[in-house]
Length: 196
Image (cartoon, rainbow, N blue to C red):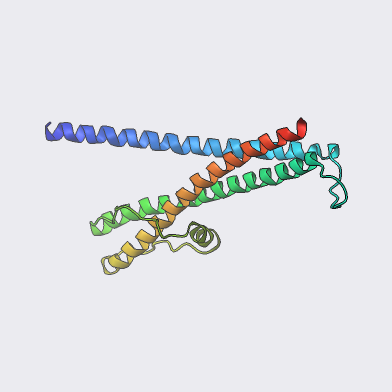
């Protein structure tokens, strides 16, 4: 292959990657919104049917009302599904915010310093997902400000930290969404026991 053919092939692969990345982001957002809407609707339905179930009374002398137990358990699971979906949405929004800053920083460093920032694999094996989520959501994010040759090494360190946070948030988004779906399906199945 000639140099021109190689460049054309590389451009083609880049365009494919952009297309599929955009499609995945759109579908992920649609799926998140769909399942959180279904969960909220199901919770509303469950609350509207609460009159069909007796009040919760803890008395060890009475037999267990399994319909009530399944109903309450379903309510709890649907609430957890909504919470998990909300975590996924919040995590995704912050991930997109960090990703935008990563792209801006790469461009600014290349433009001003004619240097590349690291793009190596990020190992998350010993990283705490929960701690990072709390840190990003509740504390100020250390974005990269002024870019000059004197602070290139500190920019690289900050940049790697932001990349790590972004990757962790992406992982949290996907995991929380999976949990959301699984718990919603389980809650619907458990609610089925109250009907029969």
